[in-house]
Length: 419
Image (cartoon, rainbow, N blue to C red; front, top):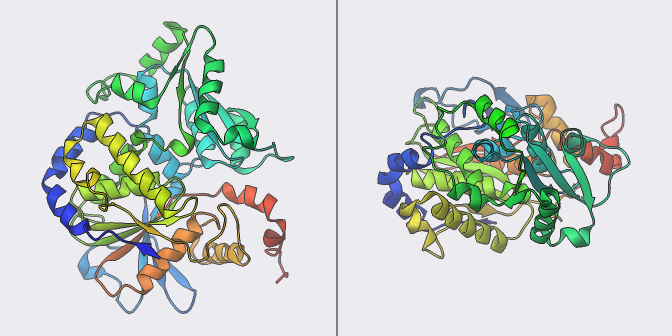
């Protein structure tokens, strides 16, 4: 079931005139983690039955569009952004890590599941910048470390936390951060570093190396930043907005053609960032997010919270049209075709991932990206309108290793000669 937004066209019209001002205020004169927002865009063409053809150099102009008799969708290959970090995690950290360096943060405390892609991303990207990460993982240490759990352990400081304690995440993070700070350090939250930083202060003129030297040689006081589970904070929206600005260039997806963006939703932050950017830039794009970890009420609550925080932290007044309407959501929240408890894999899904990989060279995982892939297929197959379908591939490669440990029977069927 798709929970649509009847006021979407009206909101786009109201916000369209503020698009350039929005970009100037939010994106310009800001330092970023990724050197460029650039990403590859491929095209998947349905042939007969479940078969696909991959076009790695698609044309985006109307004159070279794939015939309507052959259904297709674009794939934004954010899974290729970093060898160890999921694409959506890299986007969330794109605007965050420069803030940490600007504020001379020495340590980061965050949390996630045993096979959390978020904690692995924080560990890797903090280590690359000389920042110490403390990762609180839910549950017990596995007998063999693999996948994201292995990366978290290699690059960060892992502590396993019982499920009862983990249930109260805010208190758990606060308590642990205070223990790291000790008597000589202090704990920071996102609101603290955003309020003490401005876009002009985050310009590209300061040298990263100089800032790192001043942190290591000048002030030895520890500054510990708490990052919420999944980096579900307003600053995480910046990198996604930057991505939308890149994709909407005239030689790529453009600003005029209707698009239906599909993404898998864990915390929902990436989907909300896509929707917010599209609305504020006046793009005729709709966002479809496949709900995996919560119900519709939870995602709508998250949507309102993030937009409200974004408005407060970045002083964006003209998105009031969204914030002040109870029924004016910016994301179409979609039920998964085969609902299940979050993290579970159903029979036959591993084989589907294998089939896609063999035919296209694109690896999807059965928990996250397969759900988005199937929704993109459904939308493109039933697409009687002129809207193009675009799948944002968020990654998930390392997650397959953890799943193979957990679902030995399903992955065991991939052996040659076993049906």
